[in-house]
Image 1 (tube, rainbow, N blue to C red):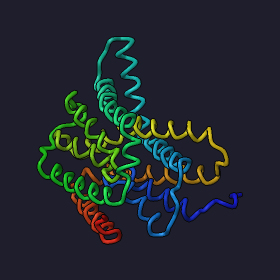
Image 2 (image 1 turned 90 degrees about the vertical axis):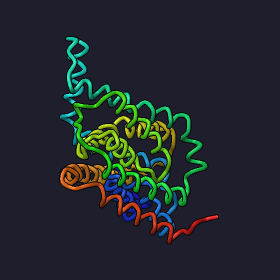
Image 3 (image 1 turned 30 degrees about the vertical axis):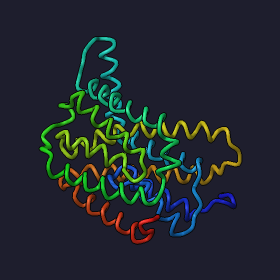
Image 4 (image 1 turned 180 degrees about the horizontal axis):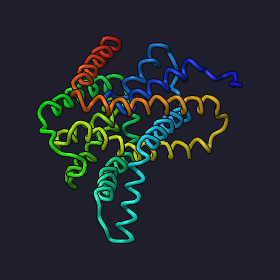
Length: 272
């Protein structure tokens, strides 16, 4: 039985938006700002953010469970038997690409949250990084697979992920853009981006969970509902996106981002 302050409509809308946009190159923050501004909803708060992150994390862990087991097995073989493999190397590439985002989060998160979290920043980044994705999609050779990753490529993708701390950039969008510029094939760029999201989303969710456990009056009914719905939608999104992107370009997402930025600009203006 739901508690009285369980706003099922609000929880459903936000969970659907998070599940659909977390892993697509379209910026979840640009979408999450729309319902709050249009319907006058207050900020969902720390606990709800944590639930959405856990739902996204649950989806990517379940979807890539076989890949993660292979990476873990590759690590063990390398440590115990001194045998390197494609799986162990992929694990090291993911670790290297994760480090810059961790550093950026620790050093700049507060500054970004207080100075750059605005509609007009989101408008600029949504359009600009959308166009940049289109340039990468059209100009890059897209000739390499994940087994051809170099340390330089992983570092470039990791450095690009640092930009995702700016609202509207899109973590998946900027990492896929960097991967395309590094000549990875579309499907491999998306796959690496999704795998790279695991430590990033997991770290954010863990930090939020620690803060949440210190608070009182948590509406667990709403959080569990939002987490499960986000997870289901995000899982389906990952599955169909990987199938789709192997056959089409990123251009539909580029067009969508530009149109979204124009809509936001029409709704909120240029600002002061």
